[in-house]
Image 1 (cartoon, rainbow, N blue to C red):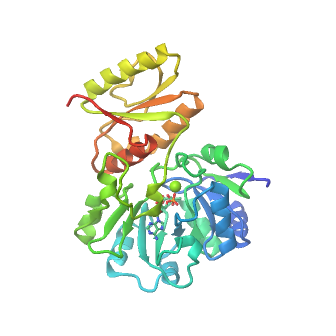
Image 2: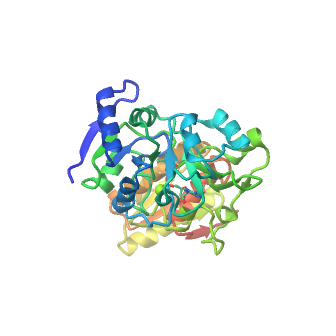
Image 3: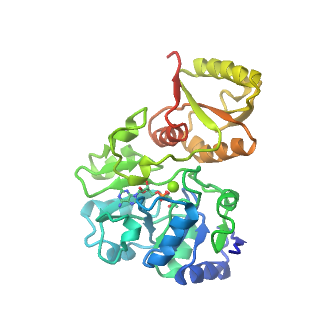
Length: 352
Ligand code: TXA
Ligand code: MG
């Protein structure tokens, strides 16, 4: 298939390109577009055949349900039988934005979207290009992250091009995704509501609006859970670059020392190594390909650079990536969740 690439300036949106995207979606095609979290691969959520194209293009297992994206709250009424009171409060506070809500689905939502579950995941993105495309297409848009299943999610159009060129009708380049990690997924069908995937909206922020919120236990563990994660997608290998990722966790000085020792060991064996460092530590490394994820006191910045860093080091051809852990709180919980998955829970703990 020939893939068209179009660049759109998010501050000066070219309506003609948006109409092309909307036409493709309405006629059952696939469009990759930027959102504020990561790039999404969109199809008309009400068209089963179009949605099956998403699974094919990504190589995604069919038991992993998709998020349906809307451009206004009215569109949610078609997708669920009843919008719970708590959902309305959360929509008011956090939509448009990086929060996905799980609710009981209506009969209009095809089974292929929900992988046979009785619930559906819904989100209103805040990225102006994403919103315009959904609005213009006048249909709800199913959109997983626009990567090959298992790879780090794309935060720039060039990542999408690496993964999906020739597999989709249109890729829209709208610059970098600002948040850089996927949305927080919150299950509203249980009480208290439960975070199934940590993201840019933190537990603390949610609790300010709706009171007690739980976190799925498998997210808090340091090893692949025997527990069955409640978001089906969380059980798969994820966010994995080609290189092996190892996390080094502990106080910062001890981490740096351990990483230096490991880099030397690997390089002496002829194995090229990449390091995911921070602004505070990057100058301490004299060997290996060093990429700083940003100021370790600013988890938002670290979050926005993580997937990009993994892809960057992969493209440099390193075989091993040594990653400094960051604080496991607030947005850092989402960062460490993605990092642990990328590492397949390969974590070395050093002196505290
Ligand atoms: O930020 C995001 O959410 C991005 C952008 C493109 O919007 N999308 C995204 O989609 O990350 P995806 O497909 O990569 O992740 C969807 C997650 C998966 O972990 C999936 O299992 C979970 O949401 N999910 C979807 N529907 C669900 C449901 N009914 N119940 C529980 N989990 C669900
Ligand atoms: Mg994904």
